[in-house]
Image (cartoon, rainbow, N blue to C red; front, side, top):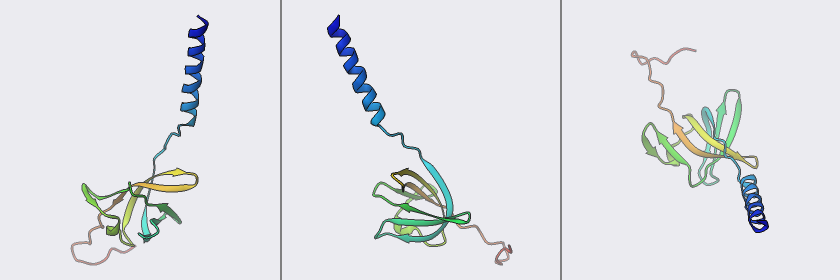
Length: 114
C-alpha cells in the first residue's frame, strides 16, 4: 500500500512539473501595411493603426495570398498583410503572413479620394 502511494505521489509530482513547465502558446494577429521587410535579418515591420510593429520571421513561417503559397520575398513594401504571431520573451515571431489583395481601382481608373 505504501509503495502504491509513493508511486502515485511521484507520478503526480512529475505530471505537475511537466505541465507547469509547458508554456501555452497564444496566437495573436495584426493587420497593417508593410513598412519594411528585411529577408537577411528576418524582420518585418508593419504600420498597425498609428503605431509600428516589428516581427521576427523564422523558417517555419508560412506566407500565402489567398490559397496560394508564397515566399517571404513576395512581400513588398506597401502590401497590406495579416500577420499571425506568438510572443515569447518579448519577441513577436510570425507563424503565418497573409498578403491581402490590392483594392481594385474604380472603373474609370481614377484613384479614390480620401
